[in-house]
Image: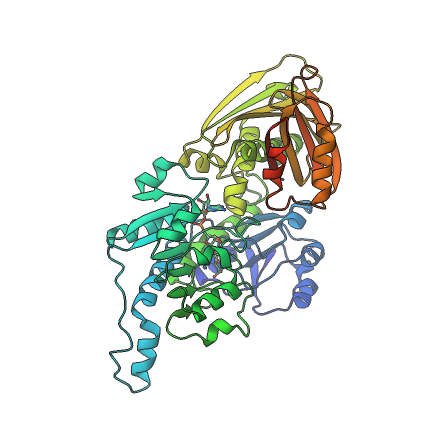
Length: 526
Ligand SMILES: NC(=O)c1ccc[n+]([C@@H]2O[C@H](COP(=O)([O-])OP(=O)(O)OC[C@H]3O[C@@H](n4cnc5c(N)ncnc54)[C@H](O)[C@@H]3O)[C@@H](O)[C@H]2O)c1
Ligand SMILES: O=C(O)CC[C@@H](O)C(=O)O
């Protein structure tokens, strides 16, 4: 019989499902060393946010087939290491949506009426009614950052309480925001106009310290901020300074830069601050939902069936997967690239399968392209299983075409996206079995491998322009790994594709667009 290790507290409903197909060992509070020591015995590992599944633990898991995260965020699992070892990582993208949304709403009301401090005051024997004069949320403006699953539920409930709603989410359409009664605005407008701000976004390089000293400086003096999403999105030092100096009215936090929260000065602040220990998902209902959701997937995978919410591996038969995997990787990379070139709000994606690829099953390729396209917005929330549904919900029209005609490469893939930054296209192919090459950008021929940090320019092909861009990057201490120019005619329009060793610092893109002959410039992080 298979063996499953449960290393965090999981609802019994999940344990019962696992017990149908496996021997279940529950061992809570193991250190990383202890986990690495016992993991070779197990076929599956089920966790919540308490266990950190590092590369070492994954390497040691010689029998491991699946890691199940009873919750949304898989930031405590080294997903790349698991993918490399062919271990499926599954999560429960929706099981705790309502719990997290209700926690944010509870925090907003508790903050407005000083409930924790008033409660502590009565329990300490006092009857002090003067110290706890609160504020109403009715007719106040709530700024929602991230209008995904949790943000949408918060919007619906806050609307019913008579609040005016603003939302900032660069990946959501105006129609979706309208449906939820939200005015979609830029982040600065949301910061300046909101009485309450609630964060419901993933932690990404773009959202890390999104709320820093500069953002806080734009907030109203009566503003209160709530973070039940991920720690590190708010700069806690900047927040503490602003609260201490009375520059904003309050903050309620469920998540922190480091968890458990250590010796933070935030703990010294009184009724204007509420701190909870990452309780967003801690309701009986959510714990039952996520436990069942993830245990069923572990059971299925142990029985040789596909998982429905795999973060890293599609729910397809192993033979099809094996054959298409390199092309799916190509599709995902190109989807991510064209999505960033076209801007967050993509309304249409054309997927054209060319050469020998045109005779293959298109669905996994289209799904992989959509997964890449949505990965900037949804990170680990998007997977091969939900990418099509997520795209549909975001109003992205998908058009598939095929062209089996001969080309330079046996099979190639062409993607065209219509987005908020305009229409862009990319083509790519495989060199050998699996090496990805970008062969065309906006119909300019190139031949470059993708890299983590890339810069693309559209410019006039004229002497000196390459040198100017090189010197400019050098002056910002950005090292160029490779550079290529693609053009159709001499001294006509051209593209430049640069692979960089370092991310581009803020402000440099503006400098690049000021260089004479440069028409446009884009950075991309893959
Ligand atoms: N406190 C808890 O216990 C708890 C529980 C569940 C989820 N969470 C966290 O809550 C967050 C939201 O979860 P969800 O299920 O609603 O996710 P979701 O993927 O449904 O929604 C996230 C939204 O953020 C938007 N977004 C991405 N990058 C953005 C950016 N730079 N600026 C503005 N918007 C951006 C996306 O377009 C998307 O609409 C996640 O970080 C999740 O891990 C916390
Ligand atoms: O397991 C938990 O309680 C954390 C839940 C939450 O942060 C998630 O990402 O789902």
